[in-house]
Length: 269
Image (cartoon, rainbow, N blue to C red; front, side):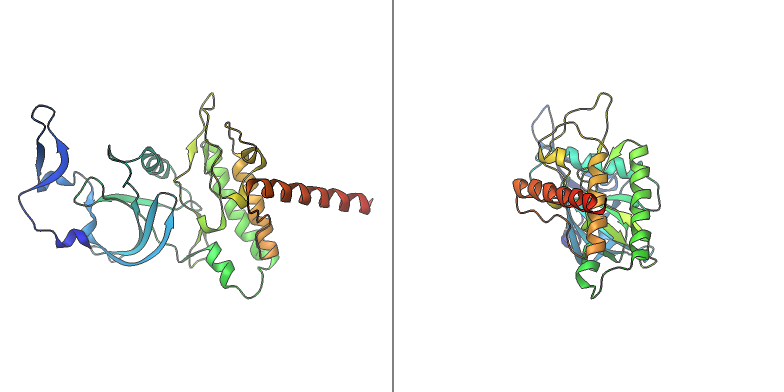
């Protein structure tokens, strides 16, 4: 790691400046990391993915030998500190405790204010990579098991008035015990009373609810449930249910699917 190569000293430059003199402030090294552990205590093994707001590594905790997921928060455009999206992700994950929600173990830091990492439980793969490597589709019993866990996780979030806003197969992690974990809370939001406006440009296009495609700014848990329905179709078909190439194309695919179902129902009468 880059941090290990730095020379040790009694104090470190932090990027903070004095309001009185305008000069950089140095903090004694024993106080540099506050109550957070130093990222140098984790050995990066390999890069395993990239979330909405950060790169994720498989890493080893050198103190406990535990394998964890280490997510470096993306902050290169945030000159004034951590982006609100990063703070929100940390706060929401800390508020969650459910077997189908990925567990945030702790927050660790590097030697600069721009180096902040989330230490999370490690899951062997995500559902997207599993689908890509499967030779045959899931059995219906497997689909039921997966979706039951997804719905349990979403029900927990929605009961806490949290909307994930980016539910998709690549954000569903799978442990070696077959447990599904909802991950990547970079776009998640708490619902307010009254609900505050939110950008409609969330949720990956193929899983985006109709109201988002029509630019609504008041979002509910329904956007997560629509995405979960798209995932259900994808697991059964072994391919994306609504693979639109643009927002207009996505709307047309939704209309075609609804018209097809309506015609089928009428033929069965």
